[in-house]
Amino acid sequence: MMPERPNDVYYACQRCANCCRWPGEVVLTEEDTLRIAAHLGLSPYEFVARHTALRRNRQGLTLLAREDGSCEFLDGIDCRIQAAKPEQCRGFPNEWRFPGWRELCEAVEVRLVPSKEAR
Image: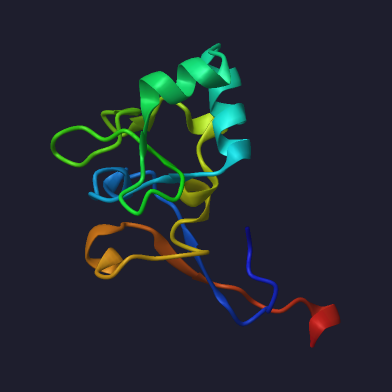
């Protein structure tokens, strides 16, 4: 999602997948669960049973992670559920960021130039 104000900065993802290797929880909404399950050809129940865990705060579900903290759907630098990835993944780094993200993320900063109509 692009910022609405013309002088804002937008970070263009370079698909480095470093954010997918960062340990932490990928919080799933109900819509995420349904979308990913359909993408994988699973029922929502099967998807939840195979690919999710209860969050540490017990307030919903998170995607499973590998022992090294990376997302289980990461394949090299490709996301196996790219077309259906969770909203949390879609929003990084423009809608939310974790501490130290800039040291890890290869996203390119793009300064948005106001259109003639906005001036």
